[in-house]
Image (tube, rainbow, N blue to C red):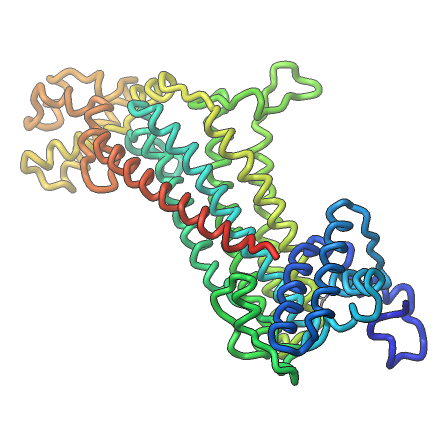
Length: 474
Ligand code: ARG
């Protein structure tokens, strides 16, 4: 059989052109979505009386056989048939004969490919919300397992104020919560059916787009046929969400790399998640977080890539839009790889609270609290800041920390000091004193954990509901 669109041509396609324009090498990833869309489309054609039921039945049975062959890896895809849509249609026609040619009634590859992309992304969004929830669960688990680990909090990567390690982990839980919300919000715009828009203007057949939508569990149909076939915003949006997730993962990765260094030793990643060196026998390298950090770049690249493909693109379909796929598929694989590893890597890491504690005992991260002590006794905070600045300088010059000073030394800087300063400057009291909503006081962190667990249960319920909807099996 020649090309499905061969009628108008008198010459065969140049071999290089065929290879250059074909997308089958990558859009075969959409085989299942393409068959789903076709099953719904042909069912609708029968329902509306556009095709007789006997033809519809033959086409459906043929499609199911094609699906089986693809699932078993028996189907052969050919570059001459350009893309997944025409490869499947060709296989259908080979299977059931010319009646298979009726499948494309009232449809174009333009609304077909857009539909495939919606079906594909709908599943991915649900999957990624689930994977982010797994990671949140691992972080919450570590926060709960280490409620009393105190570490230095940093600004400018300089020790700033002591915080609970759990509070630091819960900051990431909050970041991933926003990522989850973004994906859940994007679902609304993915949950929209382009099919029935035809090539660009609609179709002359009396089809029922809303019926097709109900078969595929879409809540809405595109209300402008040009927009339906031209819109790739939902993919850009997903790539942006993915870029932000990778950015978050890269920040956590950086911290894990730092924390697992000999200089810090705040955590130890499990052997199963590290690799060795071919020359240095002592090495245990944090390759996973390093690679996640490194792979963030390609995901950012795919976002800019697609934005640039779409820039200035006139309506409606243009072949440029075929370029939406490889970057998306690579993003999905990159994100899957990172998220699948991150949750177990966090869950199994060893937390060295002794090392963290040692760090906060030998630093000046309690200086703010001592200034606050003076301010609470009436000294203007700006002046207290100056006084403690001088005290810290005195300590540095004399090789001491604030806790090492005698009361007599403290009183040299201000008569407002008394014995109670020694309680104030203990790391656990410094932490406990930040008893404000969202702060690092143990009670506040416990509240944050409770809130996060409740939200996590909500997220799990969302995933369960939408996993069913997005897997609409036809
Ligand atoms: N392979 C094409 C793509 O991915 C499918 C749509 C082709 N439509 C067309 N009119 N050439 O964009």
